[in-house]
Image (spheres, rainbow, N blue to C red):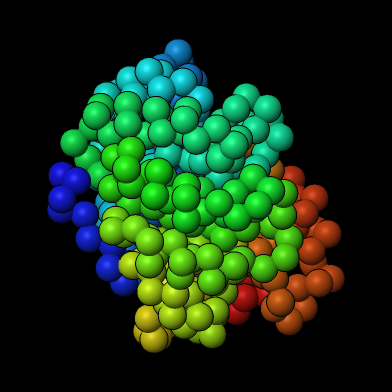
Length: 306
Ligand SMILES: Cc1cc2nc3c(=O)[nH]c(=O)nc-3n(C[C@H](O)[C@H](O)[C@H](O)COP(=O)(O)O)c2cc1C
């Protein structure tokens, strides 16, 4: 996809979530209304030094519509170079993570640490924009400890970004408090490139509130955990009747790609999300959280979800 071909108007987007948005989850979300999906954040250094190790995170599904590969790093040359790797060639667009609050990322001057270093953030965006013909986005927060989102968004635009995504919390807030939708509306009013709004969209009311900011696209992360069909729900489409079947499909896709032992641990969180709030689930949570067998967990989930 060329930069000028990107259209994010009214798109519903599955957020990048490291350790969560695996190929199975992205497939189910895409088959249930997600118009675009982001990869988990991918380290540019790791990809350049040992592409094989990151490969498993870059596998996409034919169901995914607009596929966005999200990269992170702090060296503009390394980051620009990573965009020419075969590993990333199947993505329709790229995105740079400038919002991650994780201490080990921030300590390296990456993720949301770049919101404290606008000259470097600008250099990274310019170098990456020059390195690819594909649309290039930047995903950021309000700021590190105060709201600089409009200034930061304008810098992204001037540096060559084709779109931006705002998770409207500061790094200092982590995931606490509420996303500031007024800041999203201010950002949208101050830039020409498309804006994706993100933070706390979990139902029709929050979705309408987010749309009222004037954003082009809406991104959903935690609201899709255990409920990857939320995109269909927000589009007013009918909900899946057999949720267990979708859970089985999620597992089946992951089994095609990953080792069973690793999956047994990995899938626990998804299983807990799938049964969250369902009748009879609370007594079974411990069994799922400590399960040593995917098939055992599936048996429990079948009882809860049917
Ligand atoms: C477990 C988890 C992992 C995340 N990983 C990433 C990531 O890799 N890249 C990124 O830009 N944001 C990441 N985020 C942030 C989400 O993309 C999103 O901005 C945030 O959760 C707010 O949106 P929500 O309220 O819809 O969840 C992550 C969030 C969670 C909960």
